[in-house]
Amino acid sequence: MTVDLIHRLIGLVALVFVLARLSAWISIHLQGLAFLLTRSQNLARFFIFLVLAPGVFIHELSHWLMAKLLGVPVGNFRVWPKRTRGGNIQMGAVEVRGAGPVSLAFIGIAPFLVGTLALILLGGWLQTHPENLADWRTWFSNQGWDTIQTFFHQNAWPWRFYAIWLISNSMMPSPSDRDPLYPLLGGFFILIVMAYFAGLTPNILGVLYSPLLTLFDMLAGAFLLAVIGNAVVASFLLLLERTMSFLLGVHVEYN
Image 1: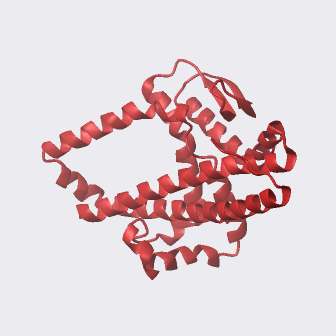
Image 2 (image 1 turned 120 degrees about the vertical axis):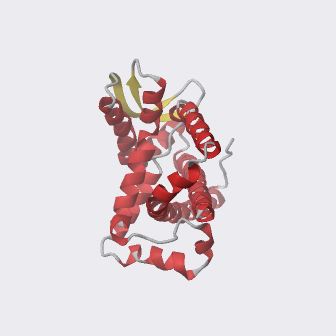
Image 3 (image 1 turned 60 degrees about the vertical axis):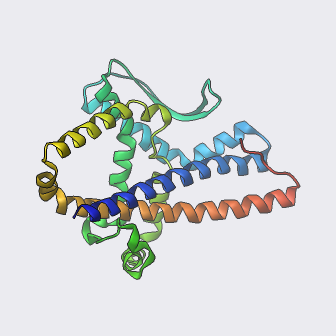
């Protein structure tokens, strides 16, 4: 029982990691491609903002809604690219005031939670209930891919696939969003260790085992579709950037 959960957890962590890396790569290289065409950093930033604007709005709106839900006062709501003091580009921001560490953690992780729910709904996983899709061992068999193919048999799959790509590229928490989350995760880990040494783990797993399997598989379906979409876009961008670099005789250096 525990082994099955561990394999699914490994699969989920791997999918989220790959998705985060692909999302960051695409954001950087979209700017690089725009810079190749315009030779202007400002126009490149504006271009990527136009491409990701709906997702950026959902990201910041998630922060705002979570703050309101927790009763935390909010200030400025900005959806527009701006260069930070560290030299990074910040696509948007929501100002919060007087929030405690737990509230800040939930506000910071809100875009990821909202984005994940949107990916599950767009993928139709609430209706299909995929099985064993979070178990990374099924990714090398027909079982996992047969489940994924059910998504592409839907009539509305093209616009859903686009929406999945757009949301997945804007749902990842920024470094400032993640900082308040680390103490909360540390406390959760301590509770798990205490439950283990108190002998409560078998009872807890017995109650949560079946719901966790279902939840993990639905999450894996959502993240796997997002990884596929981002991998396709990243491959196209790489080919287009290499072609433009060859034709123009210049290339973009990335730090």
